[in-house]
Image (cartoon, rainbow, N blue to C red; front, top):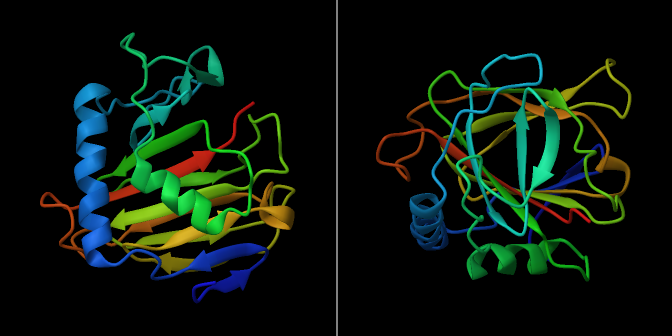
Length: 201
């Protein structure tokens, strides 16, 4: 298994994807986003999120005034595109899970975007891990506890890093405090793309 570090049960592969693999992945994601464009989600309380979001796979995770949930269609009505083969290959490499992911959430962080501490708990099967892929600018990833509050640890994730959240880390709170905008040349306009792979049903 490739070089990784473990913190609080989060398995972090800092350099899982080399530059050419990252570039190929960005091309595939451009195809997905042409089909299902990024949109700005709103929380159930009506606050606009600072990330922009889309998805690929059987389901996309959405949030609006009606709550957080998985939906088989983009808010604009189209089906989500299939998960690219290059993304599935990452899952097969690191997840240790026999099931294939049903959702690949695509989050784009522009300058100043962040993601508050949260749990991934809208899925039916917590035996399957969540796999996260970082592309573009460095993101400061915070790892917390199963309960809200308490001490946290943070680590910078660079472009090509992959994180596996399984076992004790599966329901730990986590988030992205900030990005180092312009720290990577992968995305011509700057910013960070995070892919989150999940088994939903």
